[in-house]
Amino acid sequence: MIQRMIQRRAVLLVGSSRPRGTSTSGELGRYLLGRLEPAGFRGSTFLANHLLDDAAIAAFLAAVDAAEIFIISTPLYVDSLPWLVTRTLERLAAHRRAAGAHDGCRCLAIVNCGFPESHHTRTALDICRIFARQAHMEWAGGLGLGGGEAIGGRSLEAAGSMARNVRRALDLTAAAIDAEEPVLEEAVRLMAKRLVPVWLYMLIAEFGWRLRARRNGVLDQLWARPYAVEAGDVSLASAPPGPPDPLH
Amino acid sequence: MRALIMNGAHAGDAEIDAAAAFLRRELEAVGIAAESLCLRDHRLAYCRGCFNCWVHTPGVCRTRDAGRDIARDWIRSDLVVLLTPVTFGGYSSELKKALDRVICLVSPFFVRIGGEVHHRPRYARYPGLFAIGWQDAGDEEEARTFHTLVARNALNMHAPVHGSRVLCRGGDPATGMRELAGSLPIGNWRAA
Image 1 (cartoon, each protein chain N blue to C red):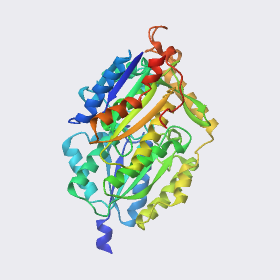
Image 2: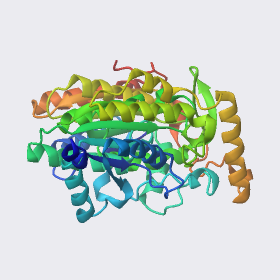
Image 3: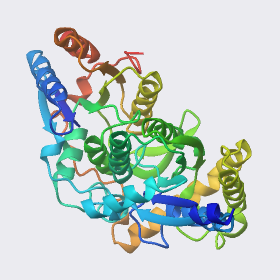
Image 4: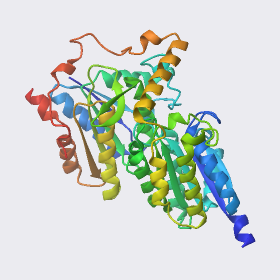
C-alpha cells in the first residue's frame, strides 16, 4: 500500500499563459492537485507557455509517461483549446503513439470560459476526450466552468462562497480519481453552475472593460474599427445571402 | 469579391497544400480575388490572452507581426476558408495559432444570440466561414466535433454563412478536388 501511494503521480498541464496568481486555469488545477495529495499523489505542474523548447517538452512527456492521471486545465480560446495546449497535445499524442503507450494513464480536462454559460466549453471538452482516445489514455471525464473571469485568477479559497460549487466539484473529482473512477455527474453539474447571475456577470464584466480602457486612455476608442475600409472598396454588401449552413 | 484561404497544414502535407492551390484557382476562375496564406511560413506569435486588443489598442493586437495582417485580411474578405488536418476534432496548431489572434475583430461587450451570451460584433459585416478538414481515417466522433466547432466559430465570429467538410486522405484526387469545389458557395457568387 505504501509503495503504491509513493508511486502515484499526477501531471497538470495549465493552458493559460497568464502569470501565477492571475490564472483561473492554474488555480483550478492547483486546487485539484492539493486535494489529491492526501491520497498519495505527487503532482507536477507544467505551464504550456513554458513548453516551447525541446528540453522542456521532453521533461513533460517523461512526466506524463510516469503519471497515473494527466489533468488539462485550460481557458477556452475561440471555442476550443488555445494554441499552446493544441500544440502540446499534438506532441504528446504523437509521442505516445510512437511509443505504443497503452498503460493505465487517465486523462481529465477542466475548461473554463469567459462567457457566463458553461456549455460554451463543450466542444473543447470533446476535443480533449478525442485527444485522450487517440493518445491511448483512458478518459476520466471533463468539467466545464462558465464565468471564469469572476474568479479572476484568485485561489478558490479566496474566492469565498461564490466558488463553493467549484470547490465541491473538484473535491468530488479528487475522490473519483483516487478511486480510479470516472468523474461523477454531480461534479460536472456543480462545476457548470453559474457563479453569479448572468445579468450581474455581464454588468460587472462590461464595467471592467470600460474601467481598463479608461485607465489606458482609450475609453472613447472601445468601438474602433481599425480595419474597416471605405464603403465600396470591399464588396461585402454584395455577398449573396444564403442558408446558415448550406452543407449540412 | 475577396476570399482568404488559411492553410493550416503542417510541413510536408502535400495533400492540403495542393488543395489550397486548387481552391485558389477555382475561386479566381469565377472572379473572386483569392489570397492563400500558408500559415507555417509566417512567423506568428501566440495569443497571450492579455485582452489588450480590447482595452489598450482596441481592435488591434499589440503584437506587431503577421497576426495583424491576418485579422485585417479576415475582416476585409467576403469568405474565409480554413484548411486543416482534423486534430482531435479541432484545428491543427498551425491554424489555431492564427485563429486565436482574430479576437480583436469582435468587441469585449456581450450580446445574447439565440439565448446565449456572445461577444458583440465590432464591424458591420463579417465574412462567411468555411472549413475543410482532412482525416487519416474515418472517425465519426472527430468529424462531428469538427462540424460543431466550425458552427460555433461562425456564431462567435458573426459569419453570415458557414459550412464545413471532412475529407479522408488518400482518396481519388479528382474526386477529392470535386468535393472541395462543391464545399464552397462558389455557385452563389457565380450567379450573383
